[in-house]
Amino acid sequence: MNYRTKRHLVVFCTSLVLLLVWQLGAMVLDSQILLPEVGPVVSALFTLAKASPFPLHVGYTVARALESFFIILISATVLGILAGRSPFFSMVAKPVVTVLKAVPVMSIILLAFIWFSSGVVPLFSAFLMGFPVMFVQIEQGFLHMDKNLEQMCDLYDFSPSLKIRYFVIPSLVPSFVTGARTTLSMVWKVVIAAEVLTVPRYGVGAQMHLAQVQLETENVLSWTLIAILLTALGDIAFDGLVILLGKLKKYQDVRRLPCDIGK
Image (cartoon, helix red, strand yellow):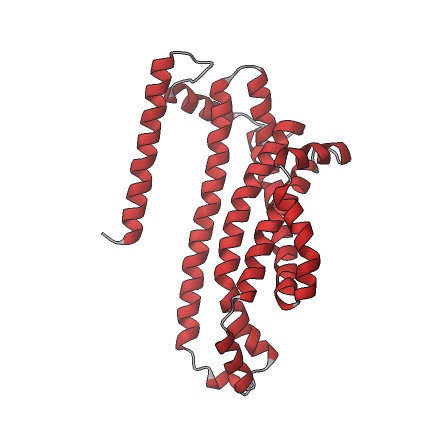
């Protein structure tokens, strides 16, 4: 049994244990409002999935999360590299990043709700909360690049394009993947939390809020399971990305680098 199979088996068994604990807790409490059993929640989940607005609620949440995520990826990567290259820029950016890391999520969301419409609040809030995570990862990744390899690139007079291709990008990939994975997980949470507070017309968080107001605990848990599924799909996508990058690296390793140096 290989490592991946063992990991999947452990995840499956852990999930079963959590479902068992949930079911036992619901049976002990014996209250559908406090904690419904697994069966009614699963039934409510299928009922919600069959409703016509369901794709809109999930789609709007996914769109907000991904839009904020890609804005973070681009801006934090560029600024993180600049901070890694320039100590002055790093000192200028440090107070801003520190403030964003320290400000409570709810404060950001409430202030954004004053400044923007309900549809923009999740996007803006997720950006402010996710940006410092990605920025710090890229900056630290750039600062910890192997100086010996950099000197070797200079010694062999690599062109800027070759240096970026064979040194900078491979050196930053681990930090980029780690930062992106953590950022995306945070973005899901902040977007849904912002939707809960601002209640836009469409959104997973908005539906959580409406279900809570109506004391429909099974629906609250159903939408929560959907949010967990979205996060899990993001993690699976990054696992696939890591595997793909590993294969690409092996492919590059077998290529003859001297053939490219003269280009």
